[in-house]
Length: 260
Image (cartoon, rainbow, N blue to C red):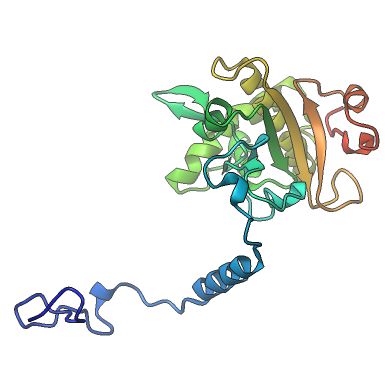
């Protein structure tokens, strides 16, 4: 008598229901090279963990900061802060490190930011842009007469950035006559500042939440150091000199601005 565990793959009719090799019903053929890389990487990860690695966070989390980053593969969301343990950083990300989303035509604070603030006692938000941002570049090109890059799921996020870019250009906050690379990096900083301001004015974000703005630099735009997160905004303050007075001793060089 057949059971669910005897290895019988039939449907009871005697017919073999498994898809034959090469049958389209079996799905596309892949060499699975990336899959093997992922599995091997996870094996190394498992082997490297001490037994008590998750001990303090197995039943809950209380991350000290929620860092909203651009979902660019060159921006290592936890590693950039030197974090080597779980539960320290809540890490939502999207195209262009945007703190908002749209709901019925209204801009609201993204749930990835609100969740840790309201449910895990997180009291600090870091908005992290990065040099050479592709989302900002796309929005800049749309704002200056180009087409959206597509597909629709990408266009949604690019289009939400277009008013930010237009505002920056029309206000003279960026040097619109400079080369595209220069303008884009200025717009990256302007966008971070705009995102910080949105959070500060949002009813769902309590007044006692600290909000910092950073630009992660892996192209040596701000200085000669790779991977530094330059502090460009502290609770709405964008003047580098004023920011330097607020940061702990020894970190004054982290305060910078392309817009000052």
